[in-house]
Image 1 (cartoon, helix red, strand yellow):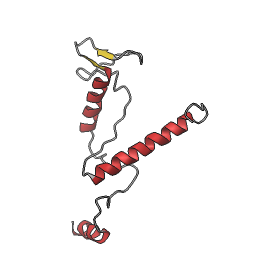
Image 2 (cartoon, rainbow, N blue to C red):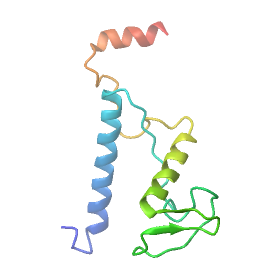
Image 3 (cartoon, helix red, strand yellow):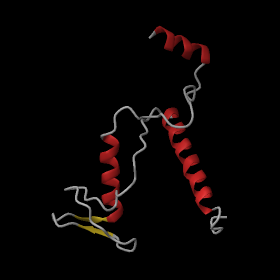
Length: 116
């Protein structure tokens, strides 16, 4: 279906949306913090000095003037982690309310919230 140029963007958008919903749901279930970060320029920005190093998709190694040489994906992962750790107040605020994902009784959960 993605090969259909008229529908490809919508299909891909729906898939990423569902992926994010599941990640946040399971984050709640397993009591892990989930943070959505802006992915723009994560593979081009140097994780050491912050400079933008333009490269094509076929270039798999990040080489910066500051001397940082990393695999492109590892560099992007470091940037995403840094952005996620720098985010405050945007955890678990996306699509689903999985407040009862741990299987607690709704009345017990409500009582806990009211007692705070």
